[in-house]
Structures are given as C-alpha cells and as structure tokens.
Length: 416
Ligand code: AMP
Ligand code: MG
Image (tube, rainbow, N blue to C red; front, side, top):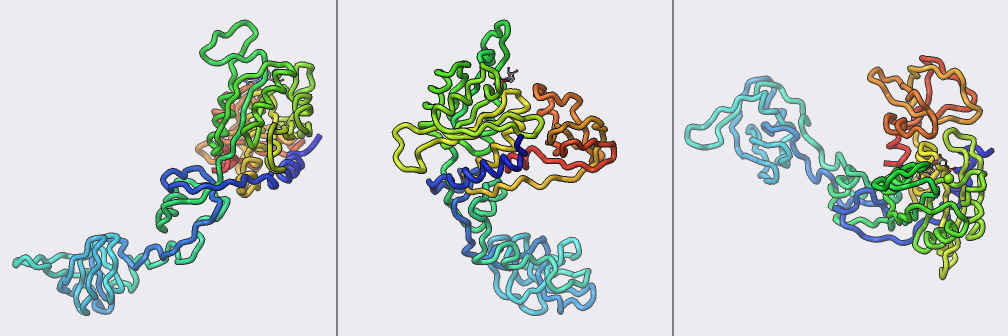
C-alpha cells in the first residue's frame, strides 16, 4: 500500500512537467475561474488620491481646537469632482469617495456637525461639534495597492474578488492558461442514465454527474464520453478516442481486481500505468498513467495523462478532491499543496479507527464542533451532500468526544 502523500509525490512529479503551454488573453469580464499565466502588476496607486470615507466636511484639524467653531463652507465636492485647495479657516462639504482638497487633513462626519444654511443660496456654514484628529476618515492614496505592486501572481485562480482587484488596477484583459481539457467516462454495465428505465440489476450513473461537475468547478473543459461497457476492446477504444484531444483522461470504476475490471489492462495496452492500493478510506484503488495520442507531433504532446478512480460514488468524489484536484492544479501551474486543515472539536466518538487514513464526511455545527454523517459507507452519496468537508483522521487513531481533529473544507480542497 502507498500513502496518499507518496501518491501525490509521484503524480505531481509527472504533472508538473506537463504544465499546459498555451496561454490566451481574455476579457477580465470573462475570466472567472481561469488561472493566471502572467501576474497582474499595478500601474497606479489605488486609491489614486487621498479621499474621504465619510459624508461630511473636509477641513484642517488645526482650525478646530475645541468643539463648536463655525466655519464657512467654501466648496461642495461630490465623488468624482476634484476641488480647489482648501482655504484655511473654511470647510468643504464632501461626499464619500470624493478626493480630498489640497490643504485638508481631516474629515468630520456630517452626524457630528450642524449645517447652517445660507438664506442667500450660498453654501452656508457648518458648526463642528467635535475635535477632529488629523487624518481621520481619510483613505490614503495607495493604501490598497501601490504602483508597481503585483496584485495577483501567476498561478492564481481568478475568484470574483480577484477579478474585482484586477479591475481596480485597470486591467481589462488578463493572460490566462488554456483550460485543461479532460475526457471523462464511466465504466460499468450496470449503469444507466437518469431518464432511462431502471432495468433489473441496473443503477443510475451518478459518478458521471459528480465528476463532470467537479471538473467544471475546477475550471476544466470536459469531453464527456458517457458510459463505456465492461470489456477490453470497448475500453481501449474509448481511451484512444479520449486521448486525442485531452490533457487528462478521468474514469470511474473498473479499477479493482475482478475480471470485469478492464481499465488496467486497457491503459497498459494503450500507454503506461501505475496501479496503486492507497492507504486511505474511502478510496484505495487508484490508477495513474498515460495514454498514447495517435498522430501526435512533439514529445510533450505525445500522450494524455490518465487517472482511474474507484467506482463507489463517495470513493470517486473523495479521491477526486484529494488526488485529482492537485494534478489539475499542477498542469495549470498553480500551487499544489494540500489546503490547511482546520483544527476543530469532535462532537462525536469514533472508537474503532481503520488501519488506513480515513476521510470522514462531517459538518460544522452551530457550536463550532464537528458532527459525523451517521453512515460513512463509500456507497452513501447522501453523506457527501450533507457534509461541509472531510475530517482527515490518521490511521488507527480513535476519537473521543472533545478531541481536536483536522477538518478540510470541500471548497478548499477544490481550490477556490
Ligand atoms: P467498480 O469500481 O467498477 O467495481 O464499482 C464499485 C461500485 O461502484 C459498484 O457497486 C458499482 O456499481 C458502483 N459504481 C461504479 N460506477 C458507478 C457510477 N458511475 N455511478 C454510480 N455507481 C457506480
Ligand atoms: Mg465496475
């Protein structure tokens, strides 16, 4: 048996040599979920000038030594309007986001002032009812981003907030890596699709939906080859087709040791493989390798990576998160480290631990502790929907209520 860490060392060593070379420029508008191939460097300070974070009055703090003075209002500055320098002894009516006039060094919020209107239609005056601190309610030029700073690094996945940050420095186009192309198929003669009738002995193909969704959520373009029958010729044929246009071929089922499991001989015939028994639960059988690409040109382009996941729905889901997601990150040039686990209190007992490292489906309760889904069987997909993530439990480690355990959020595992 191989540990999950050993598995990752071996798969990532291969995957890191196969970073997708093609990059493309896309509109920042359309870049959600993509991976930056080039960092984003700011050509400006953000904010570009000192501005007010409150509606109120800009003034010189030195002009208000004690509460109560009345200052004439010399200008009115809504956001987007740049004013004239402040005349000492006066105040400027100012609104959130407006650039601070030169000479002003504080803003007093309007709630702490009394506006004294001018019957003649002028700007009137203001009574300042507090003593301002110099600098108060001012957002400084460059306090968010400084000119020349790299705000997003190559390898970063573009979250909504990352797109916002890119936009805030004026980036209208971003250089991203081509999406990974992943060919997906399910093996199993018992599988039928939702919408078809469930003949005796059949089950619905759930992995196709789970894995396709995981791939899409990970930013891949999916070539879905459907269900492949349990025989060697059909499996080999599917592999050859899958290899034509993909960086990675992902399958579920057919990786055990039964004579109905054809993935291993098929991949062996069409490329190379390593078949592992991984010391994890759920999971265990995992195939890693590559399939030759017909008519390929260069060396880098000569094969598609292959990963074969176990058929049990929870096993394939968990193995994807722990073993496939890091490989997808590696071929996109992203950091591949396992996300940081959160130490949380176990609100359950787990008296009979397994010989393998276990990944238990768990949920965070209102008290900040972890609860387990009652049935941890690898066939019970309900557990994966109920849970927020996985408890990473070392082999042979029992848990008593109140112990601290390590928790991995599904979202972090997928690599937001
Ligand atoms: P296998 O790895 O092919 O031996 O399958 C292990 C278990 O997972 C069997 O009970 C299969 O029926 C089930 N299984 C395999 N593929 C799927 C699938 N795509 N959707 C749902 N269950 C599956
Ligand atoms: Mg099968």
